[in-house]
Amino acid sequence: MLSDDQLISGVEIRCEEKGRCPSTCHLCRRPGKEQLSPTPVLLEINRVVPLYTLIQDNGTKEAFKSALMSSYWCSGKGDVIDDWCRCDLSAFDASGLPNCSPLPQPVLRLSPTVEPSSTVVSLEWVDVQPAIGTKVSDYILQHKKVDEYTDTD
View 1: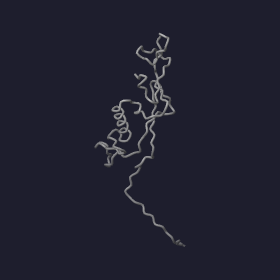
View 2: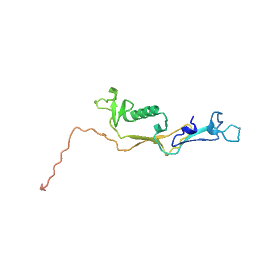
View 3: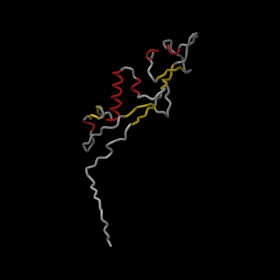
View 4: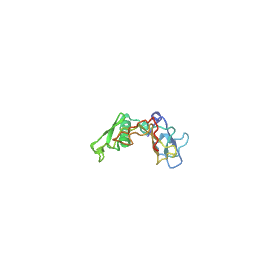
């Protein structure tokens, strides 16, 4: 439960007519009315922020960020160190190449196409750079410039 002095930047709690508000909820008390107010049912996100910035505790925030980065960069099989994935031994494919590789830093944000509700929050990944390492090649093509034209007649 958030108090007035614990509000998070970019997050607003509002009450809707979808039930009764518990007596402990100070956010739904209406001055001059003794009747029960509606239950707060929606976290309204009014700006795009990475999800882990909505967590107040720094330790929890870092753990959540680390888990998200490991899941995205390393398929959950390694830790992200700076912009590299440190792989576990299980993160190598049949040819011996690592399945996890350095990738552009992803940005996790709320999807602008699906409005969040009390039960659903739609997230999307946004990469700030194009993906790298799409193909491994073990040969070099050599090019030679030909200056003179030869007639094959």
